[in-house]
Image (cartoon, one colour):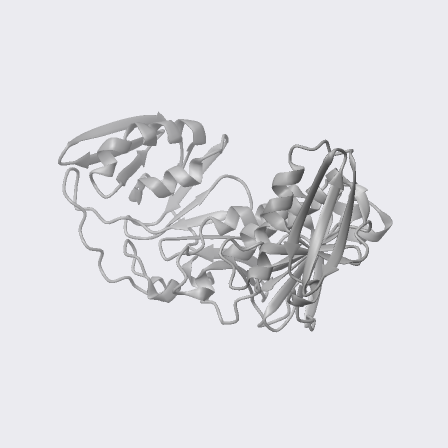
Length: 404
């Protein structure tokens, strides 16, 4: 096999998420270079990257080869040769003045992926899809005890939507253009798969999107197209020269629609950067009070306060208030995470201090945050009362202010 160093190095970068650090099989520490593809698999997720120059079949020890190539100029020609020596295989790499040889398992020992039986398939603009996944996945349950919450949910029905929640927060948004899901067949993309997909998409070459094979989606959106194929227990994401095959969560997610508050009478808007600075200035005090900050607004002013046994603090910001004044207590860390990187106006809407808050920044993604329950300034937080329906039907019947 002959190719440029850059060609193999770029392909190895793309398959990195599927090379296990603690493999159940030693052969999985290698990648398979066969018939024009570089393949890596951890027995769950498989990544195939087209490399037409890689004809033949040989295994490459992943980390050894990555280390070898990182200091060799990318335009240097390289030759890869595999030789059978008794029951073992030796692979040799020659690149300019550099030569290295490794003992590797025979290529037939590398596990073959199962064929995906496609039940449904859709195409969408990849940039919009990845951006939506990144925005929503922040709010997925990071634990694994509840698989249906440990990922991003693409929901069918009249309101085709994408959402994720952890019992304290929930983010939702309409599905990007081009995605239509069959009725009563929600797709749950595990969080690890989302992270792999976002990594590989970000590392993939930004080739021109509008080509003949891009179809109408590419022409309309000017984005690189992505095809998503859905099987009974697996998903396949295809874009450019990359194919990712990964597990999906099989199960029925809870209904998030009853959790979305409507017709909220209390609404305040404030610049995100000012809000973020004000919250950070109260961080030390709030951290001594279960990270609780109180928000109170009336007329044209938002008052942000925190109180604990260590002291109390308050910051007032000019704000745009619609409707009546309002108040609510929220968790500092969640607000800081939401505001990070935002520079436009952020709105907070609520009905009562004990009802969920709806937070937005003008984008399609909305966040619902459960309130923290406090008695009064300077007092310790109290246990929340039993929520009323539909709040009682929150993810796994989460009570506001308590983890589920």
